[in-house]
Length: 555
Image 1 (tube, rainbow, N blue to C red):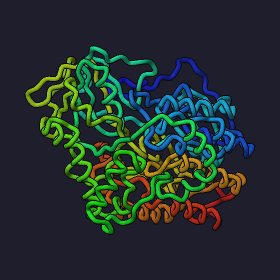
Image 2 (cartoon, rainbow, N blue to C red):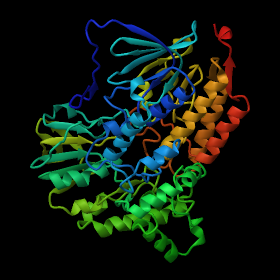
Image 3 (cartoon, rainbow, N blue to C red):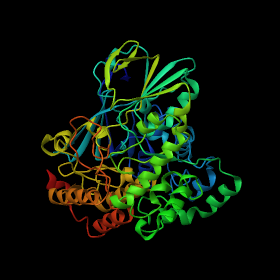
Image 4 (tube, rainbow, N blue to C red):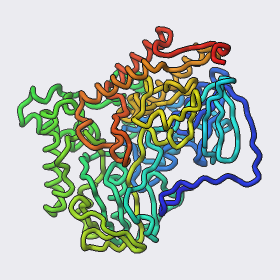
């Protein structure tokens, strides 16, 4: 359970429970989209496997993120599994960008459709995963004292699942209702008649703020960093759209793996410098108002917006102009306007009525850069010489991305070395799949893979299918990434990131939202096609960069 007032994660072990041991081929940690598909593939390969998850149902991040306004920023028909044509035809998405409730229902449908629940253990927190060198096996333990032994361990823990509480002295003094967008209650929360505060204006904050503003007596938004956001242009899908989507699924499934982000967007116009100012403005306007897609299609208007500061500048200025035209109060508009980093250097947010919300009489914006928090007590928060009385406080402060969920588990490899220690200066993970010194341990969409810079569903499927192929090729042997390959890949990941504008801001891709975390860009920015090509070449060439040993040679 998480105590939101103290910010401490407390684990409970039932008294008097005896340890149990279960032998398997594979243990999977996490019952989100990665864990579900991995289990399905392993069953088809006739391997014994279980999934362990701390939640009470499937869905991963969509099980926990139930805050008002939560929805996907990738079009729903693309943010879905592609492994089953029958599933494509059975399931019908109702909105262009699916809300959390619908995505969770989809995950639950998949679990039931493929009878996956019987091999999933819910309400278990994995405490440790230790490699037994003598037996060439992973020993996985839960907070309940259960013990599992398996030749292979697969981490399907996700990149955005370890919630981050704000680093504010005295935050535990607040006595009102406390919520985190990434650990929302599984019951309705009523903010009617209440004075509510929201800390954070990243993606989850920008999604929930308009919804909470419509309920609360008064909403106070505490903003440290202004964020770029563009209209999602969401809508209910018409019957003819749904029919066209279902007819085109085979083509779409193939196409997403040929796009840089695994997402099909309106075609880029080419380099921005090839067009005059008027044409550039028309293109941005068409993508802002939905005539050319809306949402994240904005960043794809020209193909060098993420690689050239010169080309990025007009895009950033366009969004700044939109904020100024929407928000009535000039000071509020200025406070909401990012000035010190390029558009896309932080995750570009897709919203529904976000900037309009600040024209409501019951909404106050507090710029923490100008008036920092000076005191937190039982009744609210003081900034400068103003005290904001609050009945409820929402932390929209994000995650320890990329590594947080893995570091939450005591993972120990060869010689008992912990993964936390290995990653003390930043994560290194060959192909985003395996870590040197941790044999037979796979990570789905791990650090060094496209992960959060891609449509994660196709990325998950690619990793799951690569791992499944690898296990078939191994035939029970031990596999481990080499130090040299890991170092080379980490340098390649760094170089790819440096070729973009995404290193030009303090973002969570770099771990900048976590005090003391090493500044290492953890995702692969070289694009989905080049990444998948490299992984396939590695497998085709006998798993180049990996060391494969017979069991006897491992003892």
